[in-house]
Amino acid sequence: MEIIDEKPITFAEAKEILESKSKKELKYEQANALEHLKKFTKLSLKEEEKLKEELRKISKLNENHIVLICNFLPTTKDELRAVLYKDYNSFEEAELNSIIEIVKKFA
Image (tube, rainbow, N blue to C red; front, side):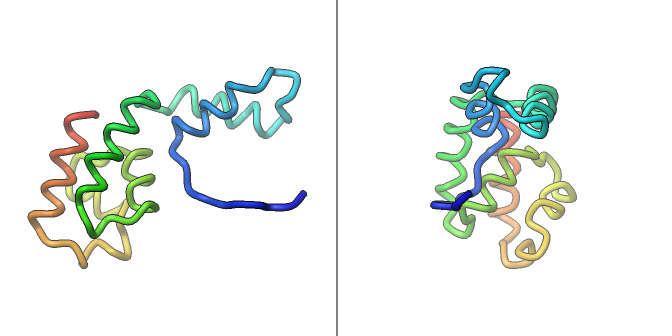
């Protein structure tokens, strides 16, 4: 198998991709991943797109940060610190509060 392109995707995007295949096409690991995603994906694909759009307005967030925030929906500073771990200190207090407020609209 050759990797042509690589990019981070959200849980909802992964769920959508796996659901588009028939049950017979899914390998064992893919079927398990789909079951996991069905249980733990909190937002629909449309809701995640709206959340991503709002998060992109915060210039310091890169695509990896946005995907992690969409997947885990941190609503406290401690949760956000865990998601942004190594880059957390590069954000100003106002930016962190803004991220949390945006996520709370969707969580």
